[in-house]
Image: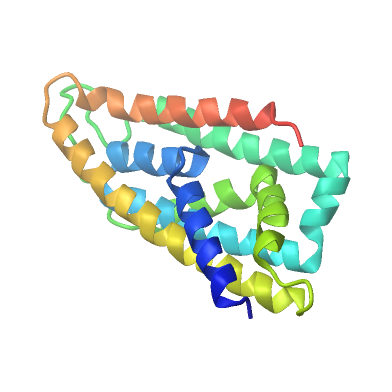
Length: 210
């Protein structure tokens, strides 16, 4: 187990990193605004669970493989960018949660499950997150102690913090989306805006370097 000083430093550093703008929280905001609180919170939980995947990868050595192999990094990057592009194009092409003829809000998402899966895949298929965990976790681990249990504890803690922060963000994004949808002429553009966010994130990931 990490020491109390290591845990405190990890919590403080993680809080700053989680609060910084990035692909995951932008996805939470865009879906929360366009599809409602359940969609935003579901995507947030999925992103947090994706962090557990990267923790496991770091423990078993897959992240090290991604860091060392151009082919592995590129393959995962293309898969992640392709999935984000799929989400973006789908949002741009569909009527989404708004009636395009009237601009009125349709029923919000009733299930978190589809959005949880989207958030999980968007995070788990991002090689930059894998490299982040590979570089970040060891800074708060005691080299004299077994690495795997320490990485599991730190990764789990990061997941819980991410879930709490992003979940709160998803709730507030849903409130903002409801307010915007009630304004004439704004509701019909929210799904399009969400689609543009995911397309932009796909482009950013596609051009990412190790």
